[in-house]
Image (tube, rainbow, N blue to C red; front, side, top):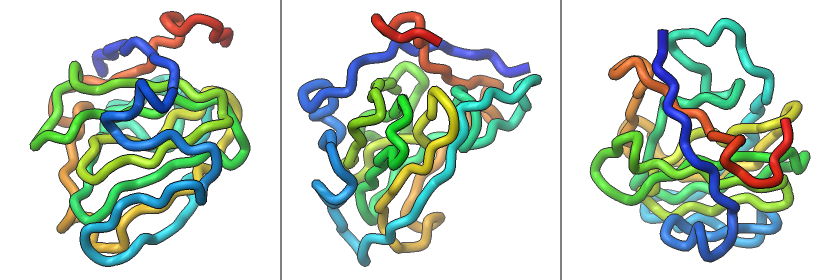
Length: 172
């Protein structure tokens, strides 16, 4: 059984997110920085439905709990909620690897997305209600050659969940 670590949720603002990149009001407002190659655009489908029981190896695209985090050295990455569902964006600082305590969770009411700098740790956004299609742009280079991954579920039996009770104004 996975141990769940709840993480305090912060409001997504330009100021609170500045050390990780930029907050965006439209998908095309800011493009991620590219170091090698070009950008590739896509859509990531995510559901807010919480699997029960929680599997030992978590999906990147369902529920609120995340355990797989990555960073990329070919380009930054952006996520924008096309259906404007309330979202939590997970990020961690630029450094060789991360610990759970390094990760931060930012709440958007669905009107804002993020454009992350190169090498910022992140995972798939968490859709808090319904289903979302996140518009994304990231580097077009080989994922394995230009990414570092951490799997807290497989490596430590641990996963992270945004503590929505800690965020003033959120009602499930």
